[in-house]
Image 1 (cartoon, one colour):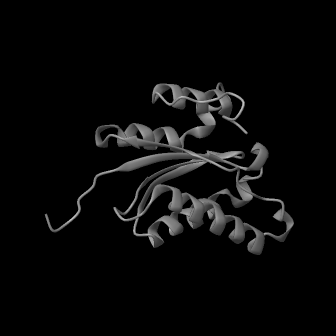
Image 2 (image 1 turned 45 degrees about the vertical axis):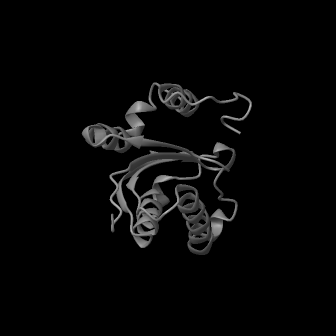
Length: 150
């Protein structure tokens, strides 16, 4: 076969360092747009980006040659640098090490996109920690509670 074909959509979740609530409304939209630009720059398609002041959900299709870990490294490094260069008052901004990523069935893309776009509604009754653990358990991912939020 001469070509590579994939249909892999990823729901990626990652947090600010120490879950500091530093993604405030004054930077949120610009940060999400910047992250979307990073994904597009790697020939990916950002479908939805949303979150809360201490974490981000990204729904995206990545190019078949793009390694997920490399993409997250670029997103975190470049977006941190962008925040530091454009918002000097946020020199302490950083991302926590690690992330969670789940593939999403095409039939569920709309549901996941709506979930990401309505984060404030979900977090009115559910903490980030509880949400994160629920995702891990729903996807059968073993985890050590000492490190899951560390």
